[in-house]
Amino acid sequence: MPSRTQSGGRNGLGGCPSTQCSGGSPGRQSELTEAQIERIDDVTKKDIEQSGATLYRCSYCGAVYNRWTAGKVLGFLDNAMLGDGWHPS
Image (cartoon, rainbow, N blue to C red; front, side, top):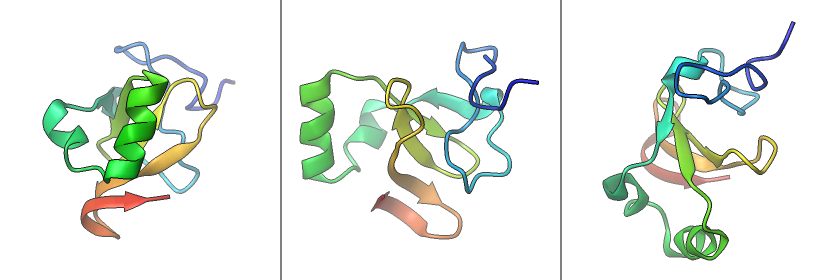
């Protein structure tokens, strides 16, 4: 049986790569909007721009990641436990 991160959802993404997320099904993953990207710290934004990677966010836990870093979570945006705003990993 494939894990949440291996199976594709309706948007072509697997589930949330955060090991701490218990509800990050594939349907809860979506691309970050420009407004959300603006809320990320400048250092992380610079790394994102240099990599050219598309970022995704889990609407359940707020994990921000890209599909190509094998589950590396860059941080959390608007996480219920950590609070609103950007929280780098």
